[in-house]
Length: 259
Image (cartoon, rainbow, N blue to C red):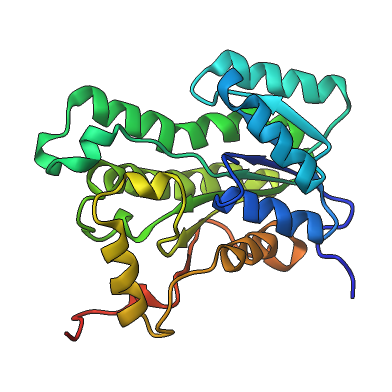
């Protein structure tokens, strides 16, 4: 059976640990024959991501803080110097201050709102602008969203608003970059036990609720999200852009939930 990403180069931003969705995507793209590149933010993450990169068989692990334009520029210049071109870029980056997740949304601080928007939404725009010169033959840009972008999820708060902005960015970027044969999509994954999810109050109740009420009566497996990322990054997804694809055991279709 042919490997879906054979001969392609995929950059994954946001691998934090082996339980992260980005790690699962890294596994899947390597399984499908892609050349894998990873980034890390700051010296504190360097050793961890380098070790994870070794596990995944990543060819390069490079420093890049997506909130700093100069680091994005350095990343691109380094790739250019090495003759690297990209076929797909996975943006799996989000952040909000813990205090802004633990209190009512109406009490969100101005600084906290700006931080969540910058890291979780604007960074996709910055990354897309930076990598376009590295995608001369077109390709795919993917990001990760969540149902809290379109519905109120208790305790998701400012992150839900940031994800709503992220999904709007996907649509506008898809329109801008389509002429360059670059597709831009989001995967809205069901709740998964990641390190970032632990910052959401009563997250275990969200997991229990989804498992009880989703059509498939279970939670989402990171590997399912990763396989969808492979589809979007491969030629199989060549006609898909500007979309938010739900991989959540069907939970998003539910209206009133039975007790």
